[in-house]
Length: 120
Image (cartoon, rainbow, N blue to C red; front, side, top):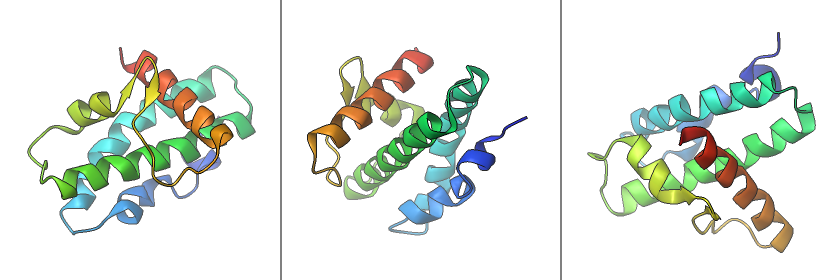
């Protein structure tokens, strides 16, 4: 059986990669706890490895944006699920400063929509 780590080997290290401050890591782990079942659902659907990897790349961007929001506005007391749901919706995701192409933004928004539908 394919696991999240089979497709995205660095998934467990995402919280450290997003970290700006030490207290970001536990918050990032909470975000990963939300992302894992979504990625597992993509695997269970039999999507191609390339498609799942693209979703993982977009989730990594989303997680980084959420952590930036958390530490910029000192929102550590808000549960990760609340902030994830604030950053995504039926139209896609919140602005991602690391995307500079329309295709990249479309891909990111598609992942955010799929995550939103999964969590709803």
